[in-house]
Length: 253
Ligand code: IPE
Ligand code: IPE
Ligand code: MG
Image 1 (cartoon, protein in one colour):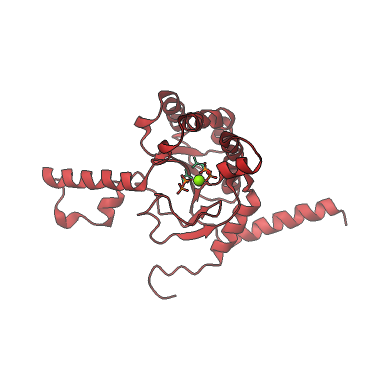
Image 2: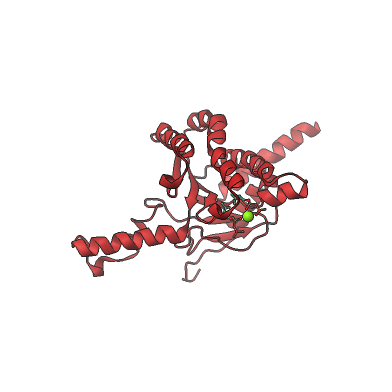
């Protein structure tokens, strides 16, 4: 038997199996470890961020290939502004660089791009390029790619709480009407079902202010692999692990 064919068949077989088991509808990823990846190689941290962008491309494609409907990637937190200004400047240029390379592919693949986070605080060059891409993909009906950029869960919840308070004061909402749906509909993720699976790379075991409300019953999967080293195969490994979990949502199986 030709060895090359064997590997091709094996790979497609596994993928078909993976899809048959049912893929999660919404996967969220805390893409962490770029700085450590660079440090290990004696490179500046920004080299790690550039390498991490390659993983963003390949994981977006991998998710689309197996029919994941929503992929949410944590790219920059409300706390990441604390980093040295040169690093922040570099990170704020990456979305443009990514879109320059990938926007045509995203459009071709029918992917819809959305930004989660306060875009008004982004530098104008970053804001303009991401909003243009959001606009250009707005009518796409395939996978939804959420990029969490200047996102923080507490800021999101505080904004929702303030809105609820204002609605109560104006009389458009009563206190009795404050329920989960009232909160959900005021979050940046309004209209999007909660993540089924959350992946965090780089060995850190925390949520770092990501989707705190939305992850109430999300399955968590952690790996020591640093984000720039995270491949399609690692991603599918996480999906397989998810497929073996028993989700009870507080009830009984
Ligand atoms: C993740 O990698 C990217 C962002 C948070 C923007 P880090 O930059 O946090 O890399 P480490 O955690 O320092 O290795
Ligand atoms: C979380 O990673 C934010 C992103 C991946 C964008 P951090 O590297 O900022 O998180 P901490 O500081 O280790 O918690
Ligand atoms: Mg980090």
